[in-house]
Image 1 (cartoon, chains in turn brown, cyan):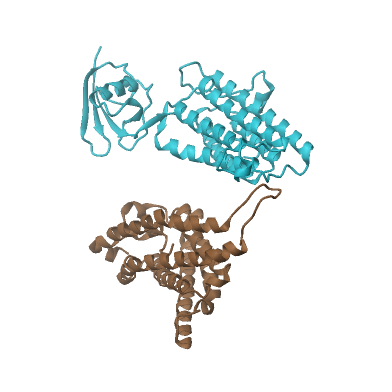
Image 2: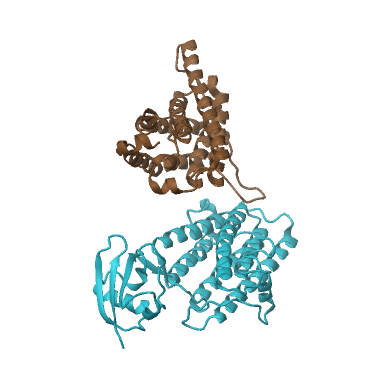
Length: 244
Length: 308
């Protein structure tokens, strides 16, 4: 999914219960600030890379190749966020964060990287753009929150841009998976057939279709969760603008 | 004898839901739940959670009114646990599914495999053996549910039956599909492997049953008492010296045996997932034993001797 992990908004809600919880220590905070700054920078690099490549080529086509390496590096790097939750320095659900990160990693490696033929599709640009804008805002949001100096603009952006970015990202992702289907079926990519000594089979083509279907129940849930978070966070502007 | 007055408030809204006067001091929470049920017929006792504090722990049915820290006008808080279903019903449903489903795959009922294989039988004798073992295992579970187990909680939330059945039925179908498949490949090491696997499986089935009997005998009929289990004359129970929940240990062993017997990756996955869940349960049970009994044997591990 293209939106950021909903659970990770907890440090900045400012409700009393969350503030009284044992937060990360000074060392962990320093580390997290560095982590979030690096990630913000990384996704900025991707954003700049996309713009420069567009200006150089004069077309939207095939921009994936100009940012392929930093995209893989920084999106995969997000796996660390699962560790942060597991260790406890970030008060979010390991399961929720794990799910969000792994779905991104899946799209990056198991679909886009693995099926060469979809790399030139415009749908890839669609989700990469959505992810890039989302992540720049999200990681700068965390950076500022950790430093206890969150500009309202960033908070507003985080809880408003998703209205468009979320559907944009989901559309790009679904179209990309759909484009990959015929190639996966033809080549039997990542598939295992019977007979074999482990008495196991796996059809990647069917699996991808199941993934696409799973967006139907999952996307609305995550989308409405963000809408509810927005009401909570932006709804009480007077209480929060100074508290952060 | 001084009577108590009991008022029951909603834990969330603090609304007064029920007022009972002239309650005997030796009335139990269970009896109070029955009285509450009379005034609110939709909340049968099994779905009532009665507490002293809105956010506190549920009181037990056996707790006696006069032994609770309340005045002669006792205030309790009520929370609706939601629709409940009996453990027996859940167990019977979740175990009958795998029994029936596996047999459907074994007999190659139409629409599972290619039509030319409908109602044919596998040419590998290990497939027949596996069917017998799998069926035996679930028949044993059903009979234990009906005649052996003594449940401390009568009910669980209704939604659990959907979750549990999806797990058991789903995995059973997945395993059965491959074991009974026309393209099934028998174990690499043939007869040796199958024999070893069968011995392990049977040993652990007997072991698991022995533990269930031992646990049943700890508890007199109709009671909910908890006691430390100890080894009995039955050698299969001597594992209690090293493990708190040997029923889970033996269950793991049975499924390892079945995995070895069928050499089927989905069976290995099922064994792994089951092991993870049983470990969580065993650790919880072990912790409760330690909390409840000061003299709990220190040598014991939750599920795997010395390891886990």
